[in-house]
Length: 101
Image (cartoon, rainbow, N blue to C red; front, side, top):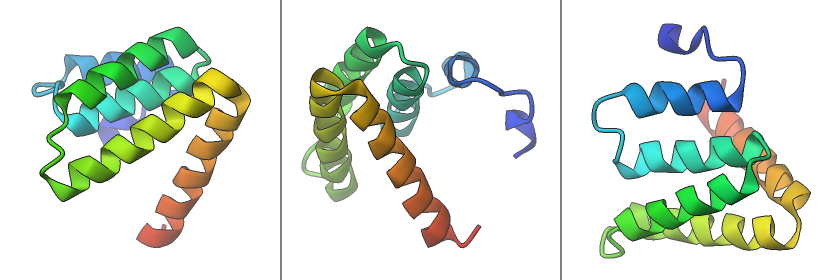
């Protein structure tokens, strides 16, 4: 995606997403939280996950799934931040496989 060409670090992705219109939607909030975790700013990642959870509507299936991922990641961040980063890497690989890219 051309607009991502200049993004080299997770914190750069956060800055980009925060500048986009509609940056308070669940997908943007999830990207921000995950990026802070990858940047090893775990306190900010936890705060971003909390913001995400508060924005979700559990009556909507995909948002309920997002909530489960957010809770799982928050637990791992508290217990073992490196395990949280590993979880993100596993989710990334599954996404790549599922998309066939």
